[in-house]
Figure 1: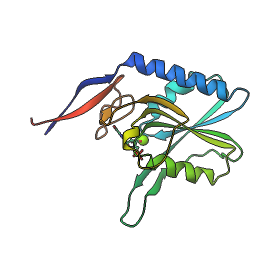
Figure 2: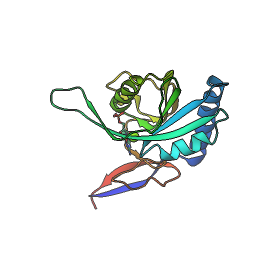
Figure 3: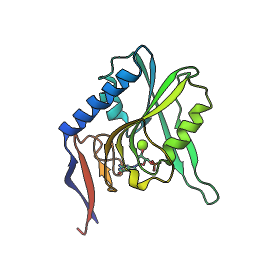
Figure 4: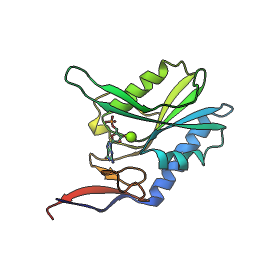
Length: 176
Ligand code: 5GP
Ligand code: MG
């Protein structure tokens, strides 16, 4: 089975407009405050880099890597593969994600970080698939809403590949 990624869903220009729009909302909301940006690895590395360069408020940047799984007798577990080295107590935190799908990862991650007593935590995502949500999770900063399709590019991968694409493409599976 082969895979084809030639269908462009979101062109580069639309992504750039989205980054500017989201950044201006963040700049407005956090005016006069300092922000701790936490990018969720690996997918959000591209969006985080683009987003922080449009911010006018003072920011520190850190990254975290987590994975979530649904066990037999649980609603979900969070495994921390890499933690932040920033102390977020009393700080305003912005979690930056590539895509929100079921919402499991971010709802658990937010809960876990709330336990460290930050002043606030908000969520910013580049892409959003609300049709697939199983957890109530509404990102405060929502980039582009997409249909229920598997996408790659702009940081998102398929088996580790295609993160470098400047546009977002739909993955389709072929017989050859
Ligand atoms: P959630 O916990 O919201 O279901 O999972 C979100 C994670 O699943 C994302 O951070 C991303 O790693 C992965 N994911 C969900 N949808 C897609 C998609 O369309 N393409 C890619 N490449 N990853 C996705
Ligand atoms: Mg992710």
